[in-house]
Image (cartoon, rainbow, N blue to C red; front, top):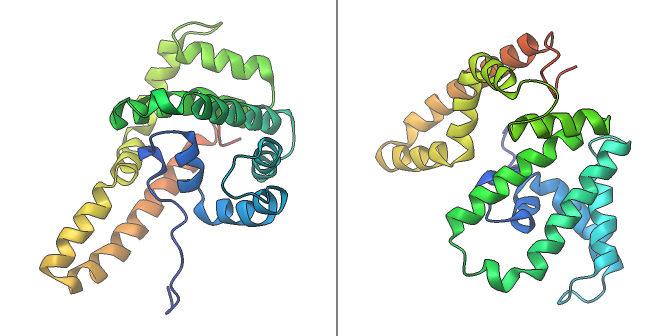
Length: 211
């Protein structure tokens, strides 16, 4: 951008095989900052896992998304997931990467309401609906989300799975100049579509992230 090489901030985080890998690939620049200024100064031994350093680092990272009960719950959720992975690392090593990736994504989606909603009962209600129960009809919510956001989800899936990165490499092997023309056009197009989705979803009480 304008002659500057900017680091990638997201490295296909939803292709991660666990939460330890996810936090390294999700908001990479912010992760590096927390690691350098929180974790490493507290944990002098780089070859070991420091529990308190890890907890404080996760708390510091969670405050980035706001301060409140929901961020504390999210931090606790991440710490629990990291702890489980650490305790079961020998068992998980034998599990296929695709299976671990799928499980991580499901658990991540279950944890998201606790980050997005400040009310614990409401967050639990969303989780219950995701699992097929709860005080309101999960099928109504699912139907609404699918109908209103199908284009957005296809775009997210396109980028989250690395398909776009793969196609870019293939095109560059054929003609580098085409990439410099198509890439900015696609970026602007996807930005406009994403903005339209967020603005359109702002009037809906079912949209978790736009109020």
